[in-house]
Every structure is written in structure tokens, then in C-alpha cells.
Length: 303
Image 1 (cartoon, rainbow, N blue to C red):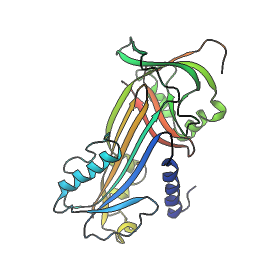
Image 2 (image 1 turned 180 degrees about the vertical axis):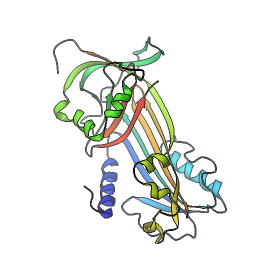
Image 3 (image 1 turned 30 degrees about the vertical axis):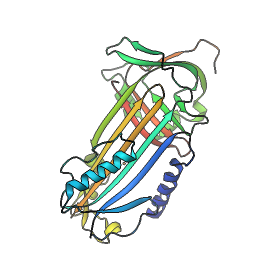
């Protein structure tokens, strides 16, 4: 239970440092940046979030400011997230833009053979990767003694028009995910895995979901209180946008995501190896093991 704002901020700093190790066998980069209108007064407070405040002229050059922010996001995500902020999202009333970007690239501990990609007959032909080895059941690992793993959840049978995925999503929460993937319920087993190669890219507006989750005041001209940023209550959030990219192939997984909030004036067995085919929609998660944090999660309906 987090008891204070200070505890929350310090916890974020610890998480940020934990998932950005200097000598990891995978690439994981998380970056934050604040963009404020030049001449507008902001309180100093970048220590815990590792976020620099860069002045931009939103009044006279809103489009140039938008392009500069998008270029920073593209650089932080190795070119995977482009055009995070759409045209006209930044205007002369913008006073601050808060941006978070995360990039992950991990190789499989046991790589799929690039020479064995199989075209599987189904409702839609897809290229499936095949591998037979010992895995922690329900997970595929990145690197030795992996600090990060990919978790794959697929309904065991097709029970409805949604292939059972809606039921799984409805039942899923953080507590159940932790229970299902607890070490006491994970065991090594030799499995023949067929996993489709896939590439996903999606964009979302988060104003309504965040309001539904309990923060409608942040988007209210009259109720928003960001006095911790400026010392007064003259800002509100006009938009929160999120864009994500995930690619899975024989080498491993590459993923990137970026979120921006725009503030205006007033995110081991002996029997034959069982076969696991991911041939209908499934959920996937990339988890940082040491902290238990979910870095990415998504749904693959159609590769």
C-alpha cells in the first residue's frame, strides 16, 4: 500500500533504475522527458523521474515543437515509434507535454531455427516458428537466468465466437497472472512449440480509459490540480496518447511503446514431447522478473 506521494515517486525511481541495468544481456531502455513552453514557470522536480525539462515555443511554433517531440520519441525507441503526436494535437494553448518511451529487445535463450519456418494451414495461412526444447511451462525465456521472460496465455479450447479469448481477458487480473505464473506452478517440460511470427503496431487515446479508472479531474478545466508542477492550478490534461510496437521472430522479441500527456492552460518429462500450437488468438506479456513489472502486454488476434 502506497501511503504518500513521496513514496510513490521514490518507488518509481527504484523501478526505473531496476529495469534500466547497465550491463544486461538484453536491451531495455526507458526514458522520460518534459517539454514546457518557454517563459512559463515550472517547479523543479526531475530527480526521481530522470526527466529533463526542455523549453519549446508552443505559441509561435506548435508544429515545429510537435515534430521535435516526435523525433525524440523515434530516437528513444530505435525508430519503431513514429509520429506519436498527430497534427494539431499541439497548439498555442499547450503549456507542457509529458513523454514516456520504452524500448525492449531480447533474444531467445534457445533460438528458433530460422531454417524451419512452416506454413500452417488454417483459416489464415501464417508462418509458424518451430522449436523443441525444455521450457518453464507457460513461458519462453530471454537469455540465461533471464531477468525478463515472455509469457504466453492461450485458451485451451475454442468455446465461443471470440475463440475463448474474451472470457480469458475478463477473468484476468494482476493477482491471477501472478498466481498462474508463480514458480510453484511453473515447471520445466520438453515441449514442441509452434509460435507464429507476428508484428503489431497500435495507437490509442487514453483520455476515456483513464477517466473511467478514476482520474477524470485531470481532464477537467475546473477540477484539475497540477499545482505541484506550476505552483498554481492553471493546467489540465487535454489528451493522453499511447503508441506501441511489438515484433516476434526467430531471433527474439522487439517492442517499443510511447505515451504522451498534453497539458493545456485552464501509462522435465519422459513421455513424448507435447505439442503447443499457438494457432488461435492468444495473449502475450513481457515481464521484468526481478521487479515483477509487466513491461508490455498485448493480444495477437491475427499475425
